[in-house]
Amino acid sequence: MIILHERIGGAWQGNISARRPSRLYIPEFGPTCRVALRFDGPKITAIERGPAFDRRQWEQISSEIENSVSMGPTTVGREYSFSSRRVTGSWRGEHSGVQILPPPGNAPLPTIQPADYPFILEFPLINTRVDQLASHRRIRKHRDLTLLLNILLFGGARLMGFRPPKVWVLDLHDLDRVSEWVQQGFRAPLGPPLIDSLSAPGVDQLEEVAPEQYDELVVSDELRVPSDLDQSICLYEALSGSDREKFDRAAFWFSSSSRMWDILMSASYAALAFAIESMTIRSNIHEMSCSACGSPIESGPTKLFKNFLATYAPGASLAGDRNDMYDLRSDVVHGEHLVELDREIPIIGAWTPPGFKEQDQYRALWQLTRTALRNWLKNRHLYLQQAREVCAYFNWMKRGRPLWEADIDWAFAEQEFPAY
Image (cartoon, rainbow, N blue to C red; front, side, top):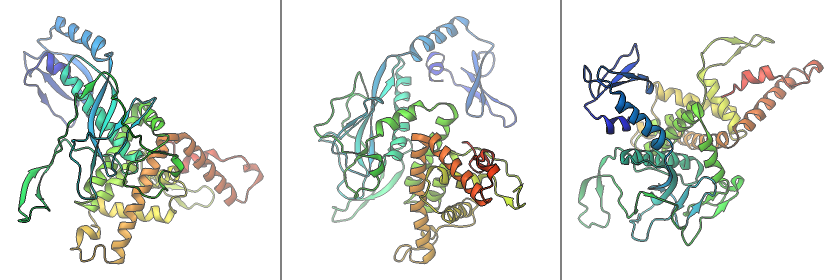
């Protein structure tokens, strides 16, 4: 779309229909239309000729896409991201080509805590001679990697945002305590947003920690990285099709949960549930019964939610806790409940037992969601296989271990833990 806008221009007019695919006419609708983009939902499914179709111009556009846009040289994109931990050193992924750099000495830094500490993120990028397209690719890749690092790093990673809000601010050092209405924003020396190769690393290196110990260390105010960070980024880059699409959705909701915490805890909690639900397949809710005892078997989105956490965060939560988490999610999403921090004027925080319970549920679901997303990315097939084996073994034991069922009951395991 950027190439068409640069080469054809125009007002761009479209028809929007809920019953049939939509079309976007370029440069406008009517006899001057050269091409029309056909949409099915958000995806372009076809490019159609218009009354004023220019074959020669279209051949030039096609040649540019094939020879420059799709196969341009590799360059390095750069942009600021933010962490809740101070970034005092650098880290470079040998295989992913991603680099974390501390901010330059003249960059602004927060003076109070907790805070968002800036760091520079560098990453490989396919370049193109179309400046607007190169800029779009850089911004999008930076967003995707920052959302990924938010899952992989203790301390997270955040963006400034594309729609910065305006807020009242108070300078605590101002004796008059006069508030000011300003737009949220960050500006610091960055240098060229596109460079030929990675910048020189910093003098100090970020400490690397074994993955199994990464979340168990004493909390530090400095950013540390897991030793398998490079591998995790490569696994993310290798995702394709629906896997990449659903993981990006989950990463978006996981990041949104943190951004909404200070504004609306109910929505923040629901966003964590949305992150899990983004990773599960759609399911038609239907009645199922156990062939042995005739008892009803739970199916549908609730079952998928619980199965995903049980599969990719095994042992981290009891079944009853997962039930309570989903019940709270359902009450919030269906408009039947607000968590206490949103509903009541706080006196000493979450001061009733239900309020404490809701905060515990949020913290537990946040950790479960992060753990499950990391495990799915790093070795989803192994975790799924283990979960199926445990489930099948459990049901074999429950049936009294009949000899004719000594082999794993894969059919039942598939039903309990559907492939995602």
